[in-house]
Image (cartoon, rainbow, N blue to C red; front, side, top):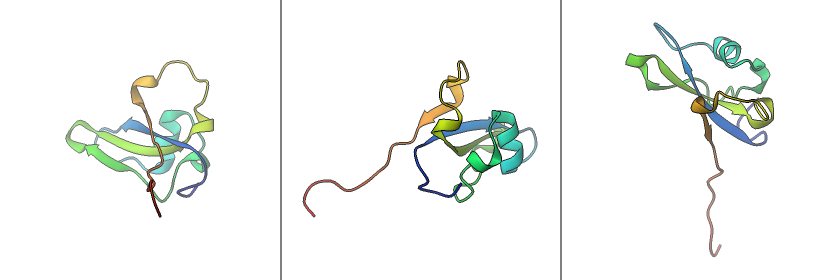
Length: 83
């Protein structure tokens, strides 16, 4: 998936020594790699603690129980008011 292909959520993944690949992040989240935003990639949040963020297609994680502690909304940011 590339950026702006539908609704997405931001999710956190943990890695021990270095940033995970998209494939590793997808596996740890239980989603397909094609549901991950390749353009966004893997973004360090707190590398010392092994915490990274990825952007995932919302539909791929919809309806799953639990795991909410690593799922964050990703609202679109757009101008408003007069053009």
